[in-house]
Length: 234
Image 1: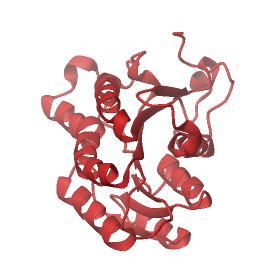
Image 2 (image 1 turned 135 degrees about the horizontal axis):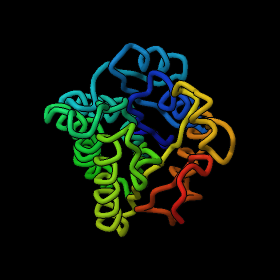
Image 3 (image 1 turned 90 degrees about the vertical axis):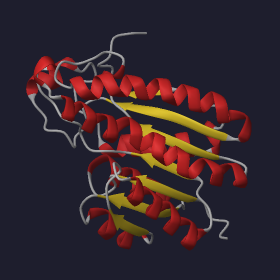
């Protein structure tokens, strides 16, 4: 078993997932990356880790990722559950199958991964999990109805998990990005943001890097907004 820390990152082929992977590589982690395109494989080769092609909605793919990570590195210290965007549409026009797709994509992916890595982290004496959520989890946005609804549910799950496993040294937190530069920028959206600009994928990567670090060792069960001030609640 290597003493070097190991991190799993999903949806790592581009955007925020790729930026997070680069930050963790810079912090010295071994990397195990997953994406549904070839992007994670290519990025892992660049960063000295390994990548697989698969989906966070497929439990067999997640199991393969965890198994391969343990076979190569013998440990899993950190997991970043990142995903693509769930279906969108007008609230009452979204078919049930799209709600089910969203459930698989933004909530059950976390549940499935936690089920796989928690026993490993307990045996190691601890670990940290960060889920990439959305600013709209607590201030629902009509443009993202499925995401807003189900990532509010993710917040509930995260708190339950964090409470249960804190005493065993395992932490789980959510990062709630606002509009980030991997999303198409428009003047109308920018005007809504007090910071006056879209966030940068690197800023999300740096936040995740901190939350996985020992410096964040007393932070668990939280929802960290990285949104330029777009949410108004205090």
